[in-house]
Amino acid sequence: MVETNFGDTHVMYYGSPSGMPVLCFGGTWITNPLSMRPFIEGVDLDKIRLVVPDVPGGIGFSAEQQLHASKGEYGQWAFQVIDRLGLRECTVLGYSFGANIALQLCQEALLCVRRLLLVQPAGIAKGTSSKIEKLMRMADKEEKQLTEEWLRKSMTPMLSFEHDDLMEMAKMFLLHAKIAKGDWKELRKKDLHKFRAPVGLIADQSDSLFPGEEIIKQARKMIPFLEMSSLTNLGCHFGLFKNDEQTAEVMSSVTDFLLR
Image (cartoon, rainbow, N blue to C red; front, side):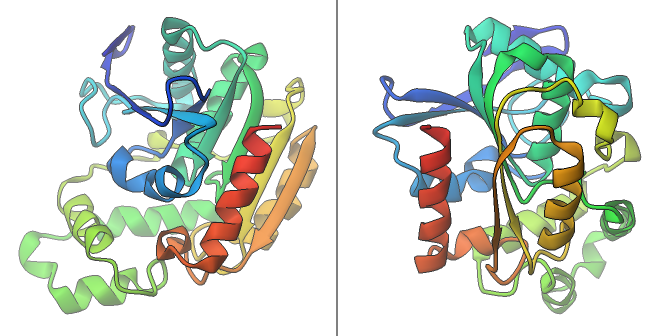
């Protein structure tokens, strides 16, 4: 556990203790062992050590205090985690909604991030708001309404293949998650205009939540030092969980960027 002004933060580690530490954010609405599974299984853990904190107020073992993006609290919390762990000037990885947290960290602590990798990031593509609001409405369902048929139909745009763990997590999320607009925010050009660390971006053209082509287009306008951008076609938002040849190629590029 790490003490912060937002309560105790539970931190998990994956990989060799001698590996290069990479601070990872997978978001608040799914357990870190599940959201980070593609990276745990796919990157070179002999050379990389993933440092994965549970976000306060999210699913996990950290304090239950809810953070608010509009008040800059995600960035403040993430900076305190870096400081307490002695990881200043570290490499940061943000996946999906976790990328939104990573971006808020970069606004809060410009000099604490040595390299930043964003994978299918939330908060960059225009029009994301309406899709998140649809998720909010889905989370209002009662348990009796969450039939297997309804759940599979609703998840198809995001999950186009069989994956029992993700389906079960989706059900738990829809039953128990309390999503508010203050949980995330869209990136503005002025937010990163002073940020000077190299940034890598991996987006997916078939991602129904965060469309890859739009993300790359907007990122090139808003991120000063976009060192690498890659457009993949993994079939859906959760395509990294397929564990096939394509995902292996993506994970290879993730490892390469993190170790530069």
